[in-house]
Image (cartoon, rainbow, N blue to C red):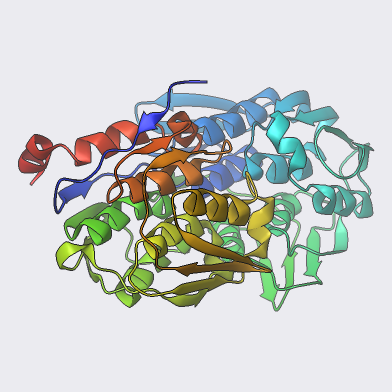
Length: 428
C-alpha cells in the first residue's frame, strides 16, 4: 500500500474554477447502449477512470470495438461472444454486464476484486433466471457464469431492488434485445437513488427505445437501439467535494460546464449547500458556491434516499457544521464499496466527532475534531470525504488516496493545485 496522503489544510478562503471529467454513470450506460446498438456510436469526452475502463474492457472482450480519438471514444458493436469479465469493485459493471452477457453466444464468467465479493448480486442473478437465463454460482455474489441458448425470451420479472437502483437499470439497459423485451416490477422497501433509473430510462429513449414507466414498474419494449452521438456531462457527484471546499473555507469555487438540466443526482448538492448557509448561483455553463465568512455551516435534516451517493460529501460538511444534522433514507449505503454508514461514523468519531449510526442513516452532532488516520476501505468517496475535513482540521492522514482513481483519476493533484495560492491567483 502507498504512503498515507497528508490532506492539505486551507490557509484561507479558496478562489477557484474547476473542470470536472465526465460522468461515470452516463459514460457506462452509453457504453452499454453503444455495444447493443445497430450502428456505431461516439461518446464525446467520456470519463476515463478505473470504473469506465473496466466497463470498456468487459464489453470489448465480449465483441465490441472501442477506438480512442483524442477525448472521444468511437464504439462499433459486434456479435457478442463468451468472455471472462473483471468487474473490479465497480457496481455498474457487476450489475449492468450480466444482462448483456445473457445475449452472448457463449458463457461469460464474471469476477472482480476480493472486496466486490461482499456486494450483493442475488437480485440480478435471480432475475436473469426468471427470464430464462442460466446462471452458475452461489446466487449471492461474484464470481458467477452467465450463459444462454439463443436470445432469451425476456418478459416480466419481479424483484426487490431496495438494495440498489442498479439492479433495475441493468435489466432495462439490455431489455430491448430480449425477444419480448423486459418488464421490471419492484416490490419491497422504497427504491433508492431513483434519479439513476430515470437517467437510464432517458438514455434508452434517446437511443430510440420504447420505454413505459410507472410507479415501481418499467417496461422496455423489444426493438432496435440506435447508434448515436453521446455528449457526456461532467460528473456532478465528483464535483461536490470542490463545491464543499468553498463552503468550509468561506471561499468561492466554480464548476465549469454544469448542465442546465440533468438527471444526475449530484445536482442536488446546490440545494443542500443553500440549506447549510452557502450562496449558490447557476449561470449558463457553470455553478458557483460561495461560503460564509469563516466557513460557518448550519446542520440539516434530510432524507438522502434519492441522492445517497452524496452522503459522504454531505457528512463531511455536517461534521464541520455548528448545529446537529440527521441524514436518513440511506440504509442501502451499507452495500456499497464498503458499509459507508459505519465507515463514516467510525472515521469521524476517531477524530473526536460525535456521529451515531441510525437504522437508515446518521445523526451528526457538533464536536471539535483533531487530526488522525483516515482509512478509505477501498472506497473513493471515503477518500474525498477525508480531504474535505482536512481543509479545516490539520493532521488528517488519508490511507489510500489512490482509490479515487475509481471515478476521478488525479483527484489528489487537482486538490493540491486548488489549494496552491499561486495557482489560485493565475486561475482567476
